[in-house]
Each structure stands twice: as C-alpha cells, then as structure tokens.
Length: 203
Image 1 (tube, rainbow, N blue to C red):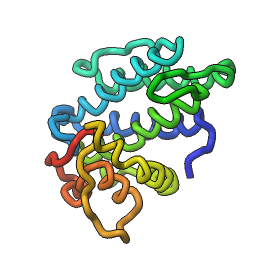
Image 2 (image 1 turned 90 degrees about the vertical axis):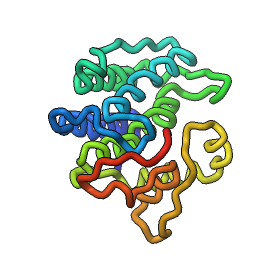
Image 3 (image 1 turned 120 degrees about the horizontal axis):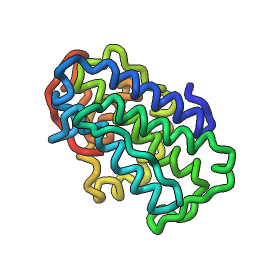
Image 4 (image 1 turned 30 degrees about the vertical axis):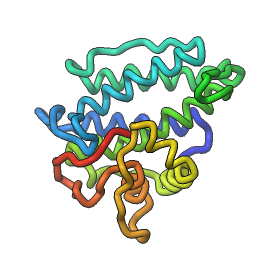
C-alpha cells in the first residue's frame, strides 16, 4: 500500500518511474508506447513539461529545468522529480494554497497529489509497456482502485477534455490496474510483457 501523505506517496511513485527510466534498453527511447504518437521519451517529456506550467498557474512555485528529454531523459526525470519532492518536503508547503479557476482553491500538497502524482502513476504503465518492462512493473492495487473509483463519476467530463481515449472493455474480473488502464483508454491485452506496439490515446 502506498503511503497516505502526499510527500511520501510522491516519493514512492516518482522513484518507481525513475527505475523505469533507468531500465529502458539502449536505443529504445524512441520505441512506441500505448499513447498514440508518443515514443517512450515523450512520456517523460509530458510529465516534465505540463506540470511546471500547471504549478506556475496556481502558485508561486517555480521548478528548475533539467537536461533536455531528447538528450538525457533519465537526467531530465531525476531533476524534475527531485524538484517536486523538494516542494512537498518543504515544511512551508503545508501552509501554501494552489488557486486555479479550473480546480478552485486547494492545499498545494493536495493539488500535487491529486493532479500530478496520479498522472505519474498511470503513465508508469505506459513507459513500462512501451519499453518491455511490464514484467518488472509493480503498481499499487489500492491506489489504482482509488483512482478508478474517483474517475468514474466524472467520466463524461474526462472524455470531453480530449485527454483520454474511449474506454476499452475488459472483463470485470481483470486485475484492478488493468481495469484502470482500460478505463483511461489503453488496451492491456495489446501490451503483453515484452511487447511494443501502440494502440491508445493520451491521458
């Protein structure tokens, strides 16, 4: 089970993603992933580019940029993740708010946890699938269940945003991580461990 605190949950999820970046085989950073039109490095690019702007749009937090994802995706992730962790570990963060017209006012740590750490968690599956690391991937079932149940009531809004593909129908008895991945538009059955062929949309 993942830790309950936003800081510790991010630490675990971000390190899991870091392990995946370090495990990408030589020459495989341009391999396709389950996200249509994204290579493996684009998964890292997505996470390291959308979130700094999101933070800046609702707080005074400025994250340092690391190396280019094109030149050093492993290093880019390390610098980015360390920056986010430093914000969460800062005692002053408990007093800081995130204010955005789309989200309303939230404690900063909660905003990071809800919108960003969850995104890293889900995209970990994309990076693992695209680079043949599903055998080594371990995503927390309880957190996957929490995310899935939280998204179901807002499914129509999610689909209309254009950021998620159509739900993929899989058996209800499937593992919860596979049900989460199918809900956000990936086909788990098309990405058996070791496979590398793209099939779904952004999320």
